[in-house]
Length: 427
Image 1 (cartoon, rainbow, N blue to C red):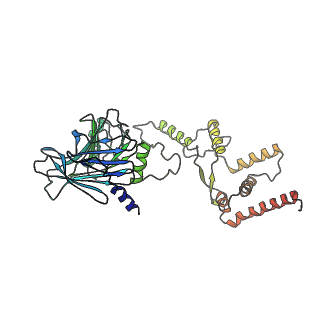
Image 2: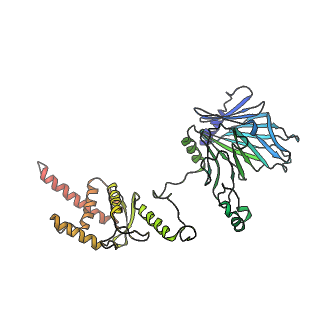
Image 3: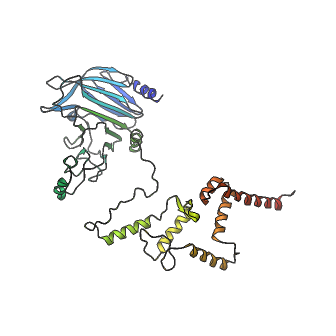
């Protein structure tokens, strides 16, 4: 069903394009081919236009230079999009086969390769480029540490070890296999050939070969995507907002699961490196991280009495109390030591808690039955009275058997009968 829907989108092949042009529409994005001469544009409803640059027009590269697309020789519609045969400036007369297809809502595939069964051994790259105003900024590209906005750079999409400081290139080159070393400040072991533009569109290079984004380097008013291959494939994602572009991109390529804990994306430390960070500073950092762990997750898994696991929610009041405790605790909290401390700095034991409750009980005039365990019973009884189901209460209390939890229903029923006896006129 979904396939037919996508095909229908493509077949809406907006033949409503101007004379001498044909287009493919997908959601708010429309790709249009100008036939004589060749020209490609991507337009968005309510957004900017991505206009092919004459200086970086669709072309393949040979030792003789770039062979540019010149005009459409023929074009046919398919159930998915358009297939065009495009003449080039190649003296050998080779042509390009260009496909445009809808690629889900708000995205369009562009694929171009040398047409027919002809010799391609001299072809080492294929590219296409688009006009870029000076205000445009370029983000994305995977895990890069050299810049946020990559405008004015040539970003290579290649897996390599790095980046390395320039003074360490010699060491890196000796220690790394040749195919894994790039003496570049944008080197990364997690590249993504993905460009996100501040103008509200995104472009993914859909080829496995090494590729490069030329981002307003030459010329300075255009950017280009180049693949070291006889073919190029791009997916263009529309917006018009950056959030909409990213939603479409991640819907198509995959999204990370939700973080298990709020601190999942915190800093990483490689410990025991005295040549980089003094060990005493490192210990201080880890201590701070341990304290930072105290802004607790939404729930804790606790190993309690009888070695039974309990799932305990962390309420806002508990979180605030722990933050207040951390601000006052006079002891250094090492990473591998308990959070809660007794008067002399040792771990807080169950006996400490019992003694504290006993002292409070005497001061407040409470009966001997007011124990920590009684608080646990009250907790469960109040939950049941407020409508919580038995299975949830069983998980919270860590009961192995549901029958153990069911005794709270008897307590609650007795309370209801007592209230009935006292309040109902016919009791």
